[in-house]
Image (cartoon, rainbow, N blue to C red; front, side, top):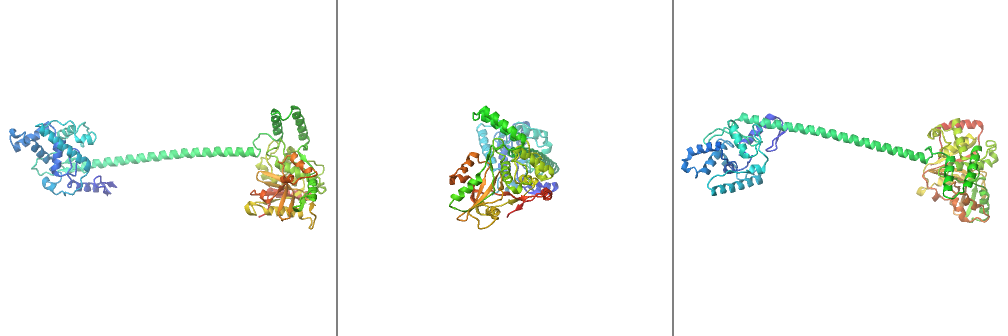
Amino acid sequence: MLSCDICGETVTSEPDMKAHLIVHMENEIVCPFCKLSGVSYDEMCFHIETAHFEQNTLERNFERINTVQFGTSDNKKDNTLQCGMEVNSSILSGCASNHPKNSSQCLTKDSTLKHETVYSENLTESRKFLKSREKQSGLTEVKGSIYETTYGPPECPFCGKIEEHSEDMETHVKTTHANLLDIPLEDCDQPLYDCPMCGLICTNYHILQEHVDLHLEENSFCQGMDRVQCSGDLQLAHQLQQEEDRKRRSEESRQEIEEFQKLQRQYGLDNSGGYKQQQLRNMEIEVNRGRMPPSEFHRRKADMMESLAIGIDDGKTKTSGIIEALHRYYQNAATDVRQVWLSSVVDHFHSSLGDKGWGCGYRNFQMLLSSLLQNDAYDDCLKGMSVPCIPKIQSMIEDAWKEGFDPQGASQLNNRLQGTKAWIGACEVYILLTSLRVKCHIVDFHKSTGPLGTHPRLFEWILNYYSSEGEGSPKVVCTSKPPIYLQHQGHSRTVIGIEEKKNRTLCLLIFDPGCPSREMQKLLKQDVEASSLKQLRKSMGNLKHKQYQIVAVEGALSPEEKVARRQDSQVFTAEKIP
């Protein structure tokens, strides 16, 4: 599509554009030197006389023509303005028709002038210039033209030559391209054609057609350059987008690596050492801070090395006799409690300098195993065992993996626990107990079953677990049921009983491995205060994690049942409570 620069109309082909441009040729007077248009015939003559008059050889030839036509040399000075007007009248004789004066009269008075502001200033300056020349009694040389103040240096429309001043360009066109202009006299009837795109006047239609073709080719070239520029911009935008995507992927990869390393550190898989290394490092810190004398450091180090060598816990974090103390307390006090159920005898183990921050799963296993070791029902499967130390528990889990228990969980922990600070959870406790021929199962409370994120179904399940041995029991019931391993995100604890208050609300009794021995030993006093039980009691409002898992012991396994459960653990499933 081609667009007319005059009226904006679009056509589909170059022949149509040429035909359209010819329509404009007979409807407008255009200055052949500065593209002034939209003025009357008389104003155009006045403009050419004042803005483009020059004392040169070609103009003197025109003056001689006017002298012969209008009088002698004595009248030349008085008729200078009239001669100039008639010469320019001849120049413009072809702008509109073969009879320019009649054609100019056809222009309506209400026609809109193109470039009204710029050209009105040109006419005003031209009139002032003419008056100054009349006062000086002759024509003087013009040093600057309105064209130069309005446009840049003029360019020849025929050969492309650029002159500094419009006067020099007029001289160049009149002398070099006079044959193309073929300026007629006033009485000539030869038609003139002006270019609708640049205002150039031609006497030959074919010359004008070729001239317009040059304009169209120039426009096509500019459009091609625009397309090349557009293509370059698209390529640059594509490169910038690729660079942005590369940086984004690099940043995402870096963040993933950092998150993975953070998780490795959190779960003890960053190869920073295990129980032994952490114990020694923390004891050295205590010595440097003056909290532990060097002699104590060496004594503890020797005890630790002995414990690791035989694989048995040194008992330095153990507190025994709490179940018996709780039985006495509920018998003599706790008037707000209707009934309480306690597990079988169990020892409390808390975290030490060697496993602080990651050893809760191991300590809860020690609590559960301490109860089983004091229960005659499990003598057959646990015969000769003692409560193992944490590195020994890690070794026992690795042995269970080697037997074929939970291959998926083993691969997640790289089949290695010894020498690491890797966390363990309900699954590892389950396979470890099963490998020891202890019958147990996992129950998953995967969502809240009460208001405000509480888990009443969890409390009901534990109540049924402990109270299943009989009804109508006394206020304090010491059952033969082992404690329950309780796991939630980031921590695990051991449930050693449940109490029912007189208002029928339930409250769990929980051993937390994060509670130090000095706090647990307060429960061993004869006159236990109710405030001391605050660290054990957990109501529904205290257990509002999203999910919970429990490992409940049910008895002993035969060798055949152990093999069957090992095969089942290869596709690990847990009982889910909705």
